[in-house]
Length: 141
Picture 1: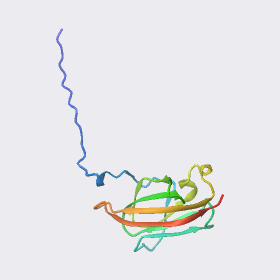
Picture 2: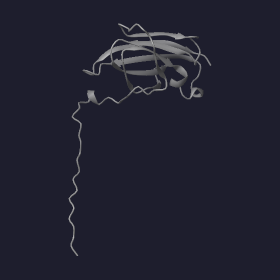
Picture 3: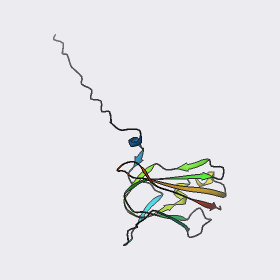
Picture 4: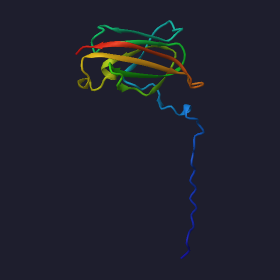
């Protein structure tokens, strides 16, 4: 009986990225972010006011992005402890809304109080930060 020698070739793909380039990001698939149809395109980054009730956990946060960016949201408590954060999401130019109830899952884990919402945007072209804004939010359950 003849023996069959099989050569197994393993191809290892090593990405040639720097540490800056290895940001973890997802396509636009976050249930907490929704694109808003709008005829006017924004010309600057903006993190708007909470609507309809500034203290309610079921409200929306509106934000605008003037150019395609990697966007991340972070919520921290009054003691600067991070309570939740998203990955970087690749978002196109436009207006969006952030749904609080989907961001703060499970909502039972969060107490009423003061929280800080931080939005960070990074340019996908050179991976440099182009915007960082935060705002104080009152959460009432």
